[in-house]
Length: 353
Image 1: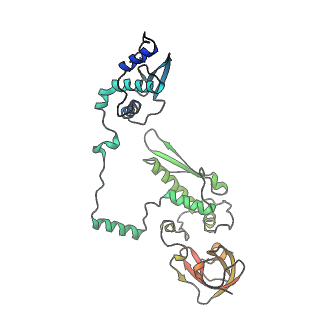
Image 2: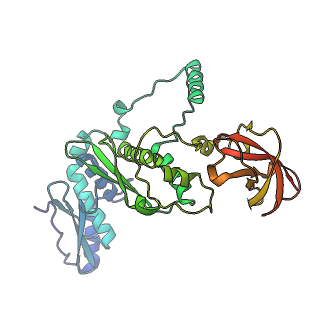
Image 3: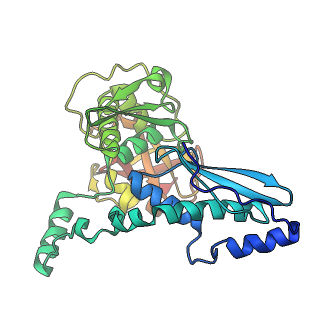
């Protein structure tokens, strides 16, 4: 490739005279836009993609007390432009960039504006009337629709329930492959899961975008994990009740979320505020097996006749608001009524004996 501007010779009056001649010959550098920035923007529009350091490179040489830079545009057939002699390297690079900008000025005017600023490409969403907006909100409320609840958010929440902790960076790994003919396919690995589950990799369907590909992989992983009985049981255990062995094979379909309520995460009633249904007619007695200031677990001395009685190893959830008398402590005897809500069985009207 050829260099389009050649170096000015050293001025016969010495360095001072050379500096004066350089300043007189050099175009004004006080433009509103930095020449290097303007050149970067032009290359992005010309190539229709972001440019990198490999696309635009500067080489600077020192001549006495002055500097001259050459800018090479590998993104535009490797063309090179030399700037004027300057008093420092920074100004020399700006001068080289300015020479390139001047050379491409006619092409800049003919290029279309950036896509984000092209008014023709803006898609205006149809505005809903107040009645249509109210109907849409009512439908979302009726169906429990929440756009923030995606397969990826559901998968993260389920893995946290199984691991009994927050996930660390690098424990959920998404990798996406882009095919030459178009389309993206993603895989996901969940290292926080116990046993062999942490080594599994789930692949999603080929999708039109990277984001959709990741959601597809998350959806397939979520489906397999939620269909494994051991993983579901591990997710239902309270924190500190032990770790799962991860031996499930993830087979079968038709899993119902076993009391796991995703709306709990998004402002809906949760814990002691969920709707209840009384199970027992007479009070039972039992023992406090775990207590954490504001909530805990009790275990009844007698068998509870209910399909959910075996969940959590027979332990019943107790909120501080359901204690009617006495001070709760580990090992103390209590009497209580049993209720059922979306999360399982719990104890209310609790009295310390």
